[in-house]
Image (cartoon, rainbow, N blue to C red; front, side):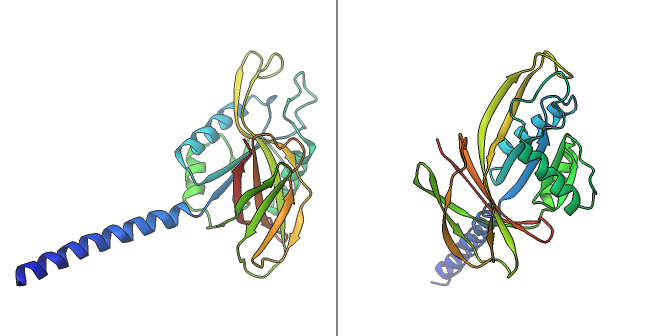
Length: 240
């Protein structure tokens, strides 16, 4: 009898530790991390960063990635086929929020809206990921081909904006001119459209958001502080 009790206690201890481990793993996976890469097909330093982003996405399932192609390299002999003025403006907004003044550069990675560094540095990217503040998931589901349903979590009271992005999950480009002439470039989650931001007070809510034109393969929704641009919640869904 005593032996059976000891065996039962041992098994309960083992399953208790296993349960805690599973719970910890699930909790870690529930917190997305947002990486935005500001890049350009005309920038010779960018392909290395494009490659790093793709590797990070393959290695970390909780990463929500966006490649935002800027326009200020387009005056050279090659115009980026994915460049958008909204991406350029978004990078300038980050420059001010992050204390960089009006200085922008490529390739630049921004993690959760608070950490920025040269995007080709895998070591800095890994460090930023390991130290990233926790953000909450936003649940997304399709209502119809033009609308997505968004379930928003509760955030600390404040002023936020909800930003919706359409993206192309994989893109390949043969560059024929400019600094990357002759290169075959690959991109991960390139932004194809940015919708009009909506205000939000951080209260739990359910909203129907219209999909931006050219949303292509997927939709990303970010909740950012209007005060400093920090991302506090994020979600992503495929539209394929």
